[in-house]
Structures are given as structure tokens and as C-alpha cells.
Image (cartoon, rainbow, N blue to C red; front, top):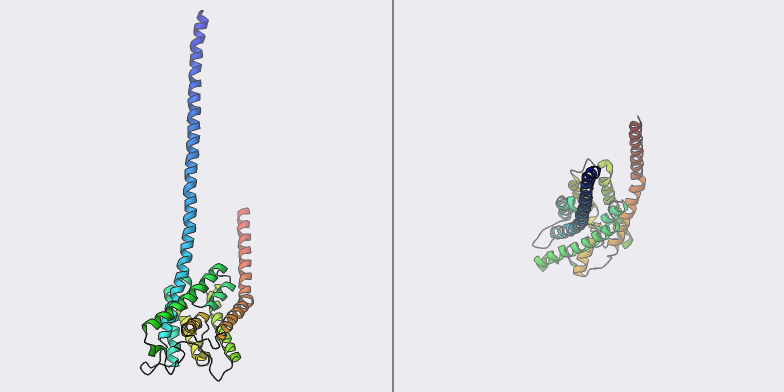
Length: 307
């Protein structure tokens, strides 16, 4: 072996070392890539779990909302109808009944308004849906919660009160059973329920109006006084139900179905008409103004970015 060949072999050995390092580096890079892939997959799993958790949380929120609506409606029926008991032992009057229902609505809104809005009334839920504030599935859920809550609330009243308090000379069909005065026809009764419910829904739409967003501190007081006023006005003629659930539960428990259709047709038709009028006659201008302001804001932002 020549001296020149002996000098070339160390150089080849020296060159072989970096090659081995490159292989190790390649293996290490592959492992790192595999580790990065594993970390990416590990990160994706918590993300899916988080998404699943959010879905569960949304479902739990919906259940909480519906349950709150059920309790609020049961409270309305129990406390409201208890305040209407009248016989030889418990004195009462039209003014006291009307004021009592208004105060009970105030309590329900104060307790559950922040959770479910405290509709307490299928007519209010219908208006809320027309006003684009609630989805159709949630509106249906509200309806069933209100009907079941009213049934439970009135049933609890019948369970704890003596029969003489439920049935008396003043309330032969049962306390809180709504009926049209004998001097009125069915048509007159349904028109009265239509008009007073339209007034109630107009109040609701006014409260929901974006222009009243800063004046929400006394919503319970407003609704309570409004219910009392409308009950004082029309209570002697039709019972001033304005609420199919409020009329349905006493009728079901006592089997009193005479002219019961009035307390579905009048309030629901009043809610439909009043909410549509408010939405398209008054809310439309607000929506157009909001769209114009949004367009102007977008233009200003684009001009600033261009400058």
C-alpha cells in the first residue's frame, strides 16, 4: 500500500463519520416528525372533547331554560290562583285578585327572567318566536313546559287547600276557572281576550325592542303593573286570562270546558297580530338603521386600512 493510499483511507473514514451522523439525524428527524404527529393527534383529541363538552353544555343550558320556565309557570298558577280564593271564610275581591296576579308575575320575572325570560304564556312565546328571538324547537319546548307547569301548579293548589276553598258560591266551577260573563256572547268574549292580549304583547315587543336595551332594570315591575291593569279592566268580563296555559290547567283539573276555545283563539290571535304589526311597522326602521350604521362602520374601517 502506498503512502498516498494510506492518506486517502483516513480521509474516507473521516468522510464516513458525517454520513453516519446524517443517518442518525435522519432517524432523529423521523422520530421527531412521528412525535410531532403524535402530539398533533393528541391535541386533536382534546379539541374534539372540548367540542363535545360545548355541545353538552349547550344541551344542559337548554334543559335549564325549559326547567326554569316550567317552575315559573307552576309558581304563577299556584300563587296567582291562591290569591283568588274567595268563600265565607276567606274574603277577597276583584281588585285584590288583579293586583295579586300582577305581583306574582313580578316575582316570577324577578326569579327566572334571567334564566328563561319567564314567558309564562304560550302567547308570549309565539310573539317571541315571531320576533326572531327564539328558535322553533325551543318555542315548542317552552309550550310544553308552560302547559305542564300550569298543570302542576294548579294541582299543588288543589292538593293543599280544602275543597271549600276551591269550590264555593263565588267559584262554583273551581277557583281560577275563566269564564265569559253571562251578559256577553262568545264573540264578545273572544274579542276582549284578543284586544287585551294584543296590548300585553305590544308591551313585550316594546321591552324587546333594541332601543330599550338600556332600560331593563324594571322589567318585572312593568309587566306586573301591566298585568294588574289589564286584569282590572277586563277581569269581570272574561277573567282576563291572556294566557291559554293559565286557563287550560283549571279547566282540566275541574272539567270546566264551557267556552274554553275563547281562551286559545283570543290570546293566540292577539299575539300573532300584535307581534307582526310591531315587527314590520316599527322594528323594520330600526333594523334598516342598524344595517346602515353597520355599512358605514365597514366603509370607515376599510378607508382607515387603505390610508
